[in-house]
Amino acid sequence: MTDRLAALRATFGAPDACAARLLCDIHPAADVAFTVVEPDLSARNLTYGELKRESTRFAAALADLGIGPGDAVGVLMGRSVELVVILLGIWRRGAALVPLSTTLGRPGIAARLRDVRLVVVDADRRTKLAAGEGVPADPRWRVVVVRGEPGRRELSFEALMATYVDGPDPVAIGGRGLLAQVYTAGTTGPPRAVPVPVRALAAFVAALDDGVPDDLSDDAAKPAPASDEVHWDTADPGWAGGLYSVLLGPLAACRRRLLTRGAVLPVPAWRLLDGFRVTHLHAGPAYFRAMAASGPPPPGLALRHATSTGEPLAPDLASWVAEVLGVALCDRYGQAELGAVLAGSAACPGTIGRPGPGWSTAVLADDRDEPALPGTVGRLAVDRTTSPLMWFDGYLDDSDATAASFTPDGRWYLTGDTASLDAAGCHRFSARSGDVIVTGGHRIAPFDVESVVMLHADVAEAVVVGVPAARRGVVPEAYVVLRSGAEPTFGLAEELKRMVRAKLPEPAVPRVVHVVDALPRTPGGTVRRAALRERRANW
Image (cartoon, rainbow, N blue to C red; front, top):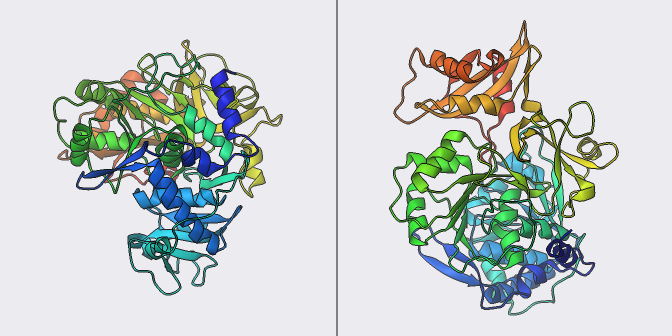
């Protein structure tokens, strides 16, 4: 373990670690934490001094409401100055955040609120807390409304802030204290509660994409970022990945970031990239596709790095970024249970890369808990004995899911994904374990088939799933969304089959091609393959 990793572990894992101090108070008061960009692209800088002052006032309000160490506070808000102030106020009290994405429906919100004592909500999202669909008519939590009039028995954030000018000292809960309770996306089953301790901040700092080095095997101390670097991450901080990369990592490392209020559509995104001279862009594949469909970028962008995460990165999208934006689009791999673990680079295109500093991974064989041969698809796993940044120990109140996530000897954490390892030590993503299609004795990775189908000029999105079949047990079928203006032709299905047949074994050829208007997605934007399988089974 390098000196840098040892220092991160010691700082964030200390018995007297205080989240508010580590994320805010120890940084120079005049340093800019975020440049907050409004929908009209006007902006203001938010300093650590402002954050300390305002979050201390909110912490005083929380103290008077009886919120303290161990209490869970739900936050249903979009990106804003108030969001950062509220989160730091929660951590200043030693309480735990339960982030709630604004894309969640009431059933998803209700499932995440079962342990909370207080919910802070943007006024325009207040209806999502109305009774029904799992939300009780007489909840045990109190509600604080931001930027709007509170209802009966509710409180106003602005009124609370006007009441206090100072507050109590921040509470130290130690490196193993609970910082947040996040939830998995629920693509393969019910969302699971992941406890995030303060010590996990070490992993989020180490994973910051200050640049994407060509050689990630060297975990020596990284150089300080260039003074002209401008990072924009489009991820939603209501989900684990966005919370880690947009807020926690940058705050802990004292790295300025753009924080955009509201959704930034593709055309304004070009203006934002140009106007703010963005050098580092991080977004999901769907966002890059929307940008590609919105027209050409303005000339002279300052972009140097582009990274993607959340879904497999199709080759055609990486090619578009390289040709149009002039940078390599590098894939990153992470989970709610880990943060970012693997990072691709220009030196390993088409892969999810190699482990970042502090992580040790392997592809395990299907039939034994030992590394598989190079090039063989197996179970992607993290070695807990040689990963000093590993912080996940299990799910809250779910011993069965916890047991299934680790090998019996406790050495390996099983990600639930499959991959292979190439000769250069780079990981090639295959599929979620439950999404692999085994047909007639052949293992088919849906991503491989989807990558070929996406090469067709008329195809905007493609998903391949396995469906029951009488003779082979399971066969692949494809669901495709066409590009704007393209019409489904009589011969489209056969064209796509011929393309797959030319590049992959015959068992990988989709037996049926369905043209659909849209793909089912989680609130976070990930395709719900299970929903497609269920839809097909009910036909």
